[in-house]
Length: 110
Image (cartoon, rainbow, N blue to C red; front, side, top):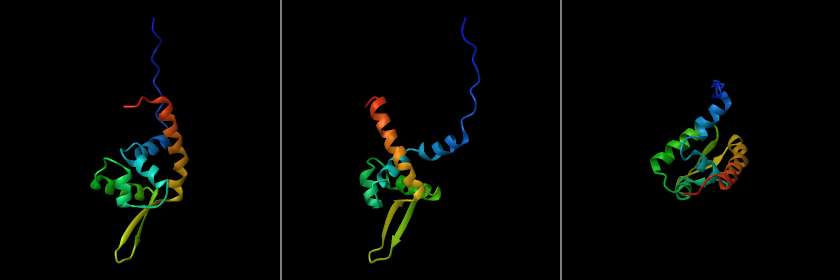
């Protein structure tokens, strides 16, 4: 005789909100790179291999809108744009680092 199936409670709304941002492809990697300090769009594109300029631009706007990333424009010439973590974004750095360590211990490498 099998065990009765019990309905699981709904996922915590805070976790749902966190993964709506962090679960999007590239966002965790962008935040991880910015955890090393301020960088330019080109620097991010080089560090996050495989991401297109369009998607990187979209993700940076989304991360800025959520309050995790700050965009800074320095008047030129030439005009330069850099990105850095906000205080809220910087609070994620230890969590992202721990997630990376967990992945090394528990997930098979491709």
